[in-house]
Amino acid sequence: MKNTLFLFIAALLFGASVNAQSTVDSIEAKYHLLPMPQALTIEKTFPVLGTYQLNGDATAQDVVVTLDEENKGIVWIEGLPEGKMKAYLKKSPATYRIVAQKTESGKQIPEGTLIFDPSTSSLNIAIGKAFDNVDPASVFNNIGQADVASSGANQVKVKTKTATSKSKTKLMVYTASKTEQTSAGTTGVTAPASPNTQQ
Image 1 (tube, rainbow, N blue to C red):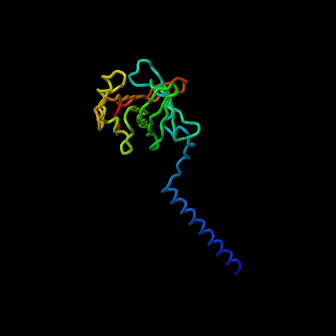
Image 2 (spheres, rainbow, N blue to C red):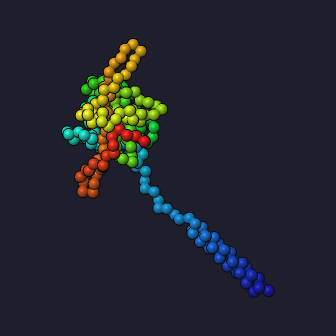
Image 3 (cartoon, rainbow, N blue to C red):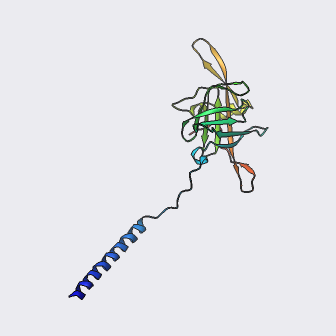
């Protein structure tokens, strides 16, 4: 009687372990474990950070975008003719508002827009037109590539109407391609897309 009871318990445990193994096998057949994601770096969080080469600039001036040490919502832009300026994050991951400001040299900079396109590694900056909260990229859509190319220095004159008079303001448009570090330690420029086109 005791032997029968032990055999019955052993058969029950064996049946449960076989059933559990088949359940594991059926789950593994449907689902596969993915590799662990890489650590989240500051460059992945803020893709605009880095060094850029201005498109169409014969002087090969580099534009550098760095993160503010105290406020992660602010980036500093250096290397443009206007001087060092700051921009505030408006829409993550890479749409920034350049506020009207004075540079360290005392030059007044009007309001503008900075947009980085991670898919093409291109940086677009427009200075001289107020930031559009609804459609920040619209400032780049209104400027044709021919206008920028014919200006030579990426300057486009835009007529703006005010209540009292008509005035001409200069809209400065810069496009740049992000440079990447290669394994040999040199930098290369990623292939730029058409400047001033946003999707």
